[in-house]
Length: 528
Image 1: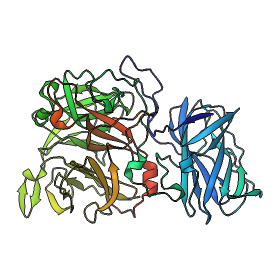
Image 2: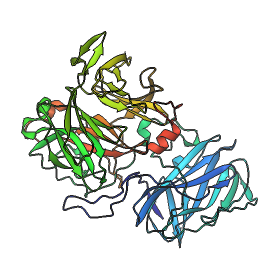
Image 3: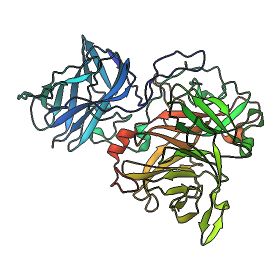
């Protein structure tokens, strides 16, 4: 029996840029939603979705939803692999017999609560065939039927089948389907890193949707850092693995039209220690292979001077913008072109135009109506109706944010999201708002470096001392990854020419499931 709990929702295994890494397919990061009809048994449905596809292989997820009035206590799903053997599976265990894979749950996701509870497992496979759900057996639920579907004709039939047990009613449903080597059999859904909401468990918060990180280069301990961040993948994100030249902070990723990934970070000399961070300058680093990395520094021009806390946004017209702490705005229509300095933003506060109000740690977003919003380190919410340069009007201040910093704002799932980092507690919290300005509601923990959220697909966990400056990378309106600026010790202990340092890490995130399970009401500025 094979057993694994590995998941990711983006370019699976990148083409490495370092000699120690292996070359693999360069697939698209976009989520795929194509498929056959779901299987339904006892009021429980099983839906398969292809979440990543690179032609010669793919990853998928199967979501079980109990819409009946009776909880499910256990389940079994059989998949027809259609000639593409599984390479790994997570959130379950499986047995392979020919072209059939039989999946049973882990102990923590075997139960599914009634009235909409869900359980999910994910998998990856090698080959051009795409799996379909062949059968579903559940213990529990409140009706009994058997259904079948065909990927070529959408035909189905049903018959009753059930047996009783001491734990409930066990019933099964089967499906026959076929998939050509060029077809993709699946339905729109996604996988989740946690099943805490399934089976009546504790409500999930944002931290539960982080996914295990694909390994780009073999994990190594032959690099800098405290034991808590070793071994690690030095090809993930951006770092100076020799710890002899540079330190990095911030780390916003933008995707070019050629599917290359461009990261914008603050950089300063390693031999100055972390204390020299205020003198950092913006550097652009590029990964031509995958979102995870490795990112290779490319240039600092046209950026110059002391420019901390760089972040950016994809504008509604498809162009790109960057903003730094002094409030400088850079724009470009293509990431292969030169960035153009557009000037410094202006802010109106009580009728007075000010530039100092930007402070540091600002985040920027453009809403669907074209307006721009900035939230700064003191959580002043500023809006400019038409121009990225402003003038921005300070609409309000998010309350109860003393001791917080590093805001990041985005819109998905019909509502605005905000993350705020409690720098003394070393953890962050997630807030939502319908209009992105007022009534921000605390939804719980967003990330916590003392948790096991930074984990690789082989189970290895890294515990960074501080995780700051979060950034979101979005595909199709959903967050698929976060970036974090990380350090292995307290900042005061990162001295010149020592064994400590900083880097930017990329952590996958299941934004599709996150938005489905945390949906807002939607609005013209932030639609569903």
